[in-house]
Image 1: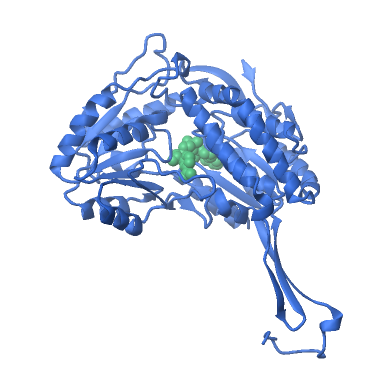
Image 2: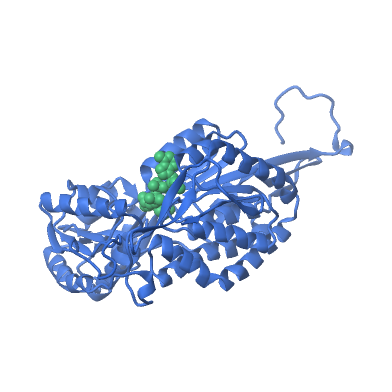
Length: 499
Ligand code: NAD
């Protein structure tokens, strides 16, 4: 049995708490490794190392910090296949999808190479008589990131790359379900020239998370995961006076207008609904065809494509559509939600409940499911399923479709498929959702924009990556300066204005 480590002060260290979590091979259902669960003392030691390393790193000029990221990008490309294999073996996603996971993180690292420009402050010459004013962006100190299982490369990079280039030290608490890739990333950053102690990877569960949230030396916490935990982390982190940004769950709707190119819409639904077995926060899980004719035609075209999806272990080849779910518990939860949909009266057009793969009978595979005639009161509509289950909710009109997405508690992503510019524009302007696609099913913004939902999909003010990340990981300091030769008047006791 492989025993995984933490990564502290530039090296892998064994866990000391005596507590471990199982890391599965999702394709076979076997436990392939044990991840150590850090105690509060181990978190404390990681924070102490980070605190000691951070001031010298903050004093390194931004251009040199950016050069570490330039080298890190090169190493990520060099080790792309190794990283992807580590992800697939613990998460279960296909190799091309795992490479995409690394690539979308790498793109944020590339954006961070612009740190010298992004960290520039403002300057006003002669803001008053003989007075100049300027602002600087200074690092927060030690920041932390708590990340989910579904993107074990991308989301840690979204967090630590901007934090580090801003001059902070970073404590990463990755998901306990697939912790190998984050450890490899920490080693690569060391190889790229990051000094020891600046990226500490602490594996663990709630005990480690709570120790981070309560630690007086951790100034900022970024979280990505499910909404109940996002809400908890936001409240506890804020109550402890930290800067906190949490990104939660989703239920992404895709509206299909009668004038849409139906073949394109069907392909978009298959890719975004079932890719990564639906374990994406930007997965489309609700199709909203407008009008009965559109709905009938959509289901007719969609069902055979969903039935023919190729499901298997990542080792079976690059042409697989998706792999197993991450754990047996995740599989059981999805299947129980499918049963709840049936009991509530939804029509199960494609039934994947009996899916089984010879040689992988104990794997966490779930066959593809397609529900039609789902209604807004059903559990399968209200809940984020996070599995290969697409629900179609028929709407009578555009307004009804728009209202459906707007009334849902989540607000991560939404898409509309139409040929009509007016409708698309109206949709983008009115919808209360953070990321919108027009004939694009998974509208994940690129690295130089920001990523974030609305409503219960976010807790906090700033988004992830892009310019917001540089705001989140820095504090603004504003300096007003006047030199003795510019001081003409005596003591001023009123609240002076610069007239
Ligand atoms: P999760 O909430 O179970 O876990 C996320 C992190 O929180 C992990 O590191 C985990 O160890 C920790 N954690 C879990 N329970 C905790 C507790 N009780 N106290 C303290 N910490 C705890 O999420 P997951 O299953 O790993 O990831 C899937 C979820 O993440 C989905 O809801 C998905 O929509 C969401 N997600 C959101 C985004 C986004 O940007 N909005 C991106 C990816 C995933």
